[in-house]
Image 1 (tube, rainbow, N blue to C red):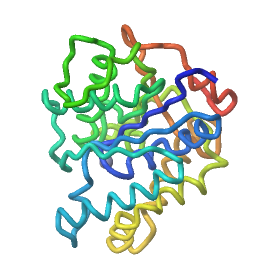
Image 2 (image 1 turned 60 degrees about the horizontal axis):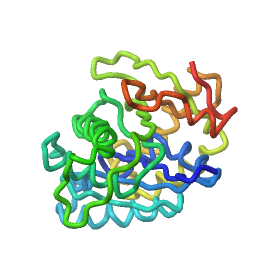
Image 3 (image 1 turned 45 degrees about the vertical axis):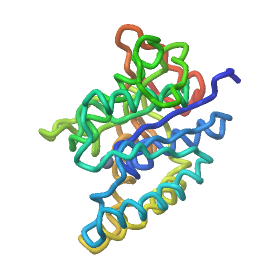
Image 4 (image 1 turned 90 degrees about the horizontal axis):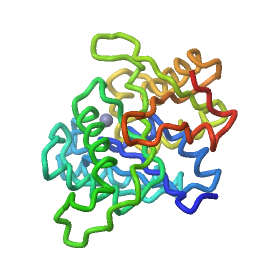
Length: 256
Ligand SMILES: [Zn+2]
């Protein structure tokens, strides 16, 4: 085991991580990695019946329940839904958070997705991974962490339904076999009862869990697994470019 065994997933809202990469996180957890979950916004627009404050409270409880299933440490960074900005304040906040966790591997949203909060979160995390080792990047946190030693591995999960806003398939290159974990994924998602019930009421069927399974089946079809999660790795200048996921999870990972 490496000295740094910390894996950090950062999503825009409570439940994004569970949808897109909780199977992979579980496999890493079972290999001895420590899981950290960061959620940029409070999920406060995620209800048609409760107030902002009540929705925030409900969704925190749900997110805590889900985090427990991964023995994960959960941090909600406190931005508001539909108001996540790529501004100096939020860039510093996300960078400081990455410094405090000091992760070896980071997961977040892809650059292109169906909603802007996800896209901005992707940029914030990309920025944070790059800035976190740079000593002269000051975050003005009252109790700042040390700059981390080097840029962590960065993986982007697939966009929702694997497509861009024009309906085109977005190519993925790294697939993780989560066929044995589809029940786990269903259970961890079901922690977000408010979201599940909202969709249940709207559609009269359990779309919440079904959407997740449909996506995992889609990525499974692209990779030859029954159910899969899909990723692309940030391999631009200065980011570590070897596929550490393959190194850790071996046969569970297919790289195309
Ligand atoms: Zn979201």
